[in-house]
Length: 607
Image (cartoon, rainbow, N blue to C red):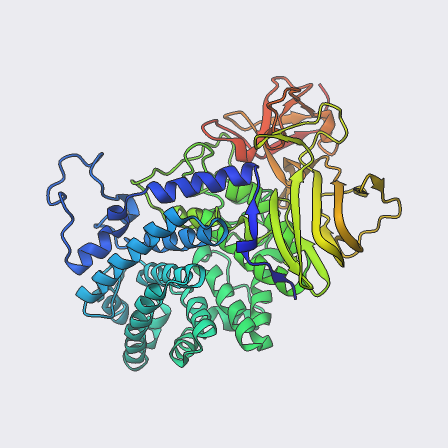
């Protein structure tokens, strides 16, 4: 089993990932406390200063959309905010953000006291009476899960005893409610989009050893989806995607805490049902609207509402559990695909705001959220997603350090009582934190030309393992201290280099070429891929491309810029050749306001 390295020892270095991380951090610090807390204040009977009458909704500091006081899903975003802020503090020791988090937790304490000492929700307790009576209400357990999660992560990541105290009292409310429902209406426990509860309660048991949390976990551990998965049934087709994925997290955490293989088998069965036996779009995402598509029937559901972002985030979390347990690179490949074409592609590169769906139909346009007027569920998962990068890069296993994702970063690692620093960068020159291609052309002009610098305080022997992505079709090139390794082998998806490390430099080049990704149910409809990166054509209508699509270089020609300002992340620009009307292609994550098309029809006839 691979062990993730604590993110307090990992910092992102300049790259597109760091840019997006910082963009997200700036949003977290700038969003107003009163807006974040508004629904908790209202539920506790605290007056919002100056907002008894709204004179100008555009400038009044109040949240709208799904966070508005009129929405039944109100308040979920603060839970996401707490989790994201706490995660950034671990890695960056961002005391400004920590002070904001502490202030918010202090305000939540006041609200809990005014609510009677246990309930701390942005929604009324009577919403749970609606669950009891089987009346419609919009996902109250989803809302409360985000609050619980935010408090739990604040405790885990920032050692906030106050957050733990709030959660402890709130859990007492849940003990009483679930006990009551076991008598009156057991089905209520499994209502209100409750799937995330299982992971929270079993994690709380893991970190506190308090039996009440194990008791709560047991009450949420027998949903129908588990019985269907154990029976080998397709339990997902046409079902709400994001309501189901958190069950796999709960089963995974139960396995890690209890060691019971039953829970691991359920998690693996979920993955098989969701991914192996269903397939996914070229981007790695799945679904239409908020629902799972039938197995391998992806082309039928191409639209402007593919790939809900919550599903992308939560499926990466499921893949992360499975990767830890197995070290199987297929899970890391899946994560990489979704990082580029989900985490990056569904975040606005200028504002940091999310798009709820990632349209994949012809002539698509991304619809971006705003800072205070939308607050879709995907808004909350996006602010958490952008803090996840450094948790996905490095893992350890006995005498082995594994590099799973290629994201510029610095790792401070203590191995065998030896302090070791490893820096990962694209192989470029750096001046004042800006990157440039080396004018002496000592390496490939590619984002996949990587440099690792190892600095150990004393000589130390261990294995450094590099994942070889599945899109690499040729043998990679590896050079250590200017000496090329000629007898390179790839073992179960990894390059394993065992040696005595001191002050060393490893250069790796992963050859990357254009490929196509056809739809399983429409093989003559395909997308272009550059490694794990989806390329989108800048056009507003369905197009047919002429030529042999199995030879993409006969259809697309790269467009290079040879200037100092070319970052590796701005590569991937192509233009069609030999077409009635030529168009430009660019990485899907670069698309912002342009209309674009991802999937094209092939025509083998030549003009």
